[in-house]
Amino acid sequence: MKLIRVVPYGLGPIGCATVRALLDKPGISIVGAVDIDPEKAGKDLGNVAGLGRRLGVLVSKDAAAVFKKTKPSVVTHTTSSFFKSAYDQLALAASQGINVVSSTEELLYPHLRNPDLARKLDRLACRNGATLLGTGVNPGFVMDTLALVLTGVVKRVDRIRIERRVNAATRRQPLQRKVGAGMKPEEFVKLAKQGKIGHIGLLESMYLVAAGLGWKLDKHAERIEPVIAATRQTTEYFTVEPEEVAGIKHTASGFCGKRLVIDLDLRMYIGAQDPCDRIEIEGDPNLTLMIPGGVPGDVATVASLINAIPRVLEAEPGLKTMLDLPVPRAFRAI
Figure 1 (cartoon, rainbow, N blue to C red):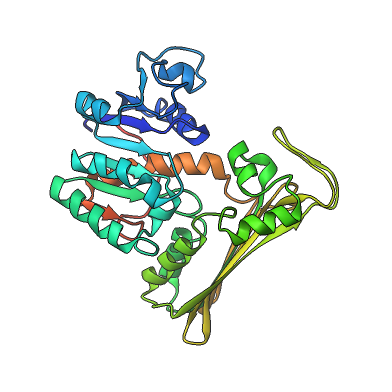
Figure 2: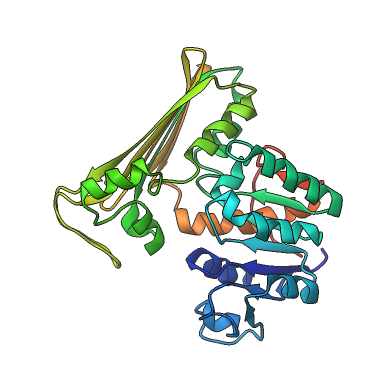
């Protein structure tokens, strides 16, 4: 297999973990690195990624210059949850014919919230021979792609229910903050009403599942609520006192006409007991898949990005979703 030249774009916790994992893959060469943080620019990537050794690759704020100099095969993109915020970064790569694997949650199904931008990016990518994909563990796998794979052995699907329970104490600091750990309930409710807190990508998961099954959803309902701590909970980053917010309960329901066809229930909070992932398919036959302990989110996000690389490199140009590419699987280059 030809050597795959990679540029990591974004060096937060997931971006740095991706760098460390890429180094374990034969056939991968990290040829550059980009992050807008001035504290990271000019430093060696090995030190920024916590390797304790130099890699001989300097981090730069200038993505255009890095792309022009290094001519990467693919960019692993981990900068933002929101498509609009990430658009210029993605468009820059696409304009230079560079493939992208992104953890941007809204990119899982970009036509839902930003159809015009999605079409614009797709045209740009097609014109320049680039393939772009949004993926991850959730959204990207547990509450969407995995459920669709399971329907492959079902003759008729009437309804899908997916539950995910995550002990947020085991996750990275930005995620614990994102679910509201340590907040007062009234602050959480205020931010939820403003759309500034909660899991990003739940509706994208729902609409990806619907599209995969050929269902046109007539309406959906979404609800975000705080999970309140009953006892004191302590993590590496936060202390949550009783009556403070431990995390979120985020649910979404999708309807064809008046019939509920997709039901998603995500509970992610500090101290969650018996974490698990559960998929229930009602149809012919009924099927239930249970993963005790659940899929470990941070590790799985990194794996999703890296394992998508060869599938993206082999795909036709354009802005793709998980519906467009072959079944996710691990890979070992050369």
